[in-house]
Image 1 (spheres, rainbow, N blue to C red):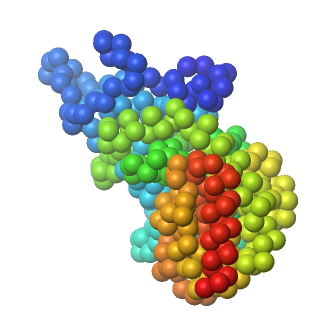
Image 2: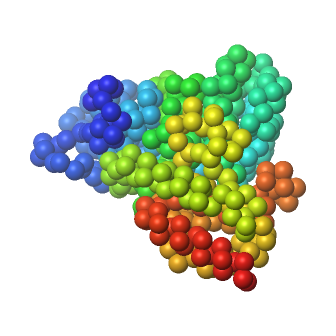
Image 3: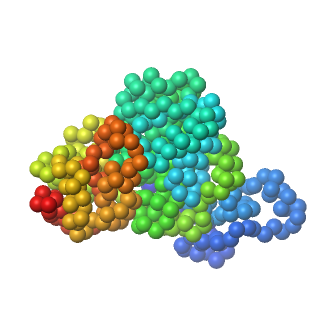
Length: 396
């Protein structure tokens, strides 16, 4: 597969391995182990695994390798390692590269489980973590030290949609010898240029847009071949966080349509944000594609679109937010995102529930905030649904 081909073509064909039967759809290799022709071949493979050789499914599998090769091609990375979940990817990438005494600088606005990994797990084992405002380049510059091993951030923060300048932070980090590790879920592989913008390690929860239909948990870490195979793979294969072959097959099928799905979802998100902006029931509409977003110019330069998620803040607080959610007829209440179905979440009581109130206040996770992951329904139906739910909330 040529790197000169369009990403939509790469997402369908890259990494394909066909068996002797010449199947069209990628084969699912549901096996834990592999047979060797001889004892000598087995010994040689355990000594050094070749590029298309396998010894045990926890170490690698042909179906999983197809997914890894395809997403690496799409992302412009040298290599990838597929994991059991998005959080397995986050924790594996960070823990495999860090040791006691290392220093990490992280954006403060993160998914709750990421904060747990940084504060609780890494802190427990002697890694020092400094949190900063991700949009404040002066704060990054002040916090990154000569002994900083890595910086970590969500390129678009969940759920407040703060956008971090990848290129600028990468320059600051690389000047001090630190690696740049990015959770890139909201940007998606469709709108991502994170590697070319300076990221060393890119992480996706494949559960989100890559699957895109709410079927399976999965994650993937992308980066240089030295990092993926020399640092991450030994940790992941010995601790058991690898992706299953069946999940990898689902993710391959998801990649075939990701470009079409995500672009359609982003277009609908833009239209909905514009339609809701200024509504009397809303204190604010947050969407990186809106001209009034603090990082609108950065978003256009870094992603080319505002993404598939917007957040709305109901002026009536939690009571209004709950009444709004309960009045929905098309959108559903759940805590996933990137799905074909429009999903709405109340972060303060669900995904970010465990954060201290002062942290919620600092991040802007208010009682009225609702995250809206826009699906593939007709945008007119979505607009009607959100507007009637706002009317219902106003009358509650």
